[in-house]
Every structure is written in structure tokens, then in C-alpha cells.
Length: 248
Image (cartoon, rainbow, N blue to C red; front, side, top):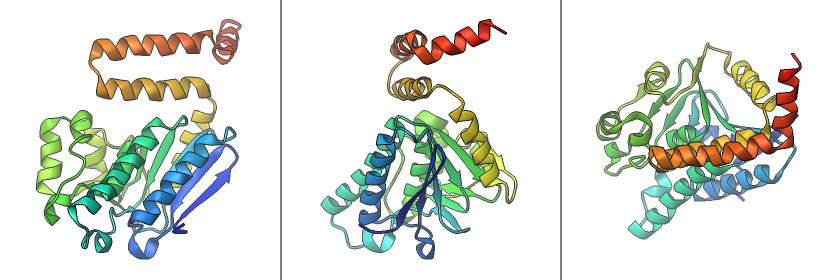
């Protein structure tokens, strides 16, 4: 265990914190494996309804991969390292609960990938985003970004290796909400509260449907949505909510 990941549970919300502020929360192999185990653990806990990912300190959400570790890797070792980032991204997207990224400071490279893999991204006004791997001679996020921002925006982000302000990331659809200075925690708490009020089954199946929509054509994703929605409607939570609505 790396001991750089901690979990704080407040009511029905689990806060997963990358706690390596002296390295701007950079992720190495041990931390990635610990984060993956942590995600599995919170997914098994039925009392947890919402997961919030954040970085310790004021400078970074997650600055990205630990370049010191990466520098000495062979191609095979880098492949295994990169696959861990892919596994984290996929695990976040397939988690049965909504995941919110609370982004303060920088979210670069693998850290940006972690953020945009979450269902909702809330950024501090001073947050910065980017995929700067090209500046070091390699690449990242070319699989996901075109689906989120389109081919040309994705090319700009990954080929030029620059940074995006929170406002720019919001304009591209990579950020849901920008919090005023000092208000990030309050905004995340409000979104968490609203999610907890929703049907956990519906939220889980919405996640599954959205994921299929990223990978499939319109016809397949729309039909899949109908199948999952029918499961929701027939379930007790939906029936109770519909009954309350009709009694208004």
C-alpha cells in the first residue's frame, strides 16, 4: 500500500482524496493500484450513494503521472503503467454510483483523464486543465477526448500541449460547474445532496446508458436506454416516486 490515498465518509458520501501534496498529487504505480482498490471498496459499500474525488492541498487536483517513475520505464513497463490509468478511468465510469471530480489547482495529463472520467466535474475558478504529454514526446487521452469535445478540439488540446482555464474547459463541456473562490466544497456538497435525493437505481442505469452512448451509434444507444429505463420504471423506487407525483 502506498498510503497516499485516503477515504473519508460523511453520511452517504465517500470522499476519495489523493494525499501527496508535496508532489502535487502525482500518481505512481503504487498509488494507482491503491486508488483502484479504493474505488472497488466504495462501490461495494451500499451505504455510499455518491463518490467525490479530490486532491489534497491547494495547488493540484492531480498533476498527472509521476514523471520520475516514468522516466526509467521500458516500453513494456510504460504500457503496464498506462493500462493502470485506463483501468482507473474505466472503473470510475462503470462505478455504480455517481462520481464527482472536485478540481482545485491543476489537472494535467493522467490527472485530467481522471477528472473527465467522472460523471460530473466541478472546478475552482483558478483550476487549470490540459494534456501535455506531447511536450514530453508521448501522448494521452486521444481515445476519449474526441468523443467529448470533437476531433478538432481534441487535436488542439493533445497536439499543442497547452493549458485550459476552468472557463475554457467549461466552454468545451469538460467542466459542469465553476465554483467561486472558496466555494468549491459548498458547490460539491450541494450537488451531492441533490444526487442522494435521486433513485440510486436510476442513477446507476443512467451511467450505464451514457457509457454505451459513448461507444455505440445513436440507434443502439437509444434502444439500450429504453431497455434500462423500463427496468427503472418497473422498480419500487420509481413506482413510489410516480405515485407521489400523481398525488400532488
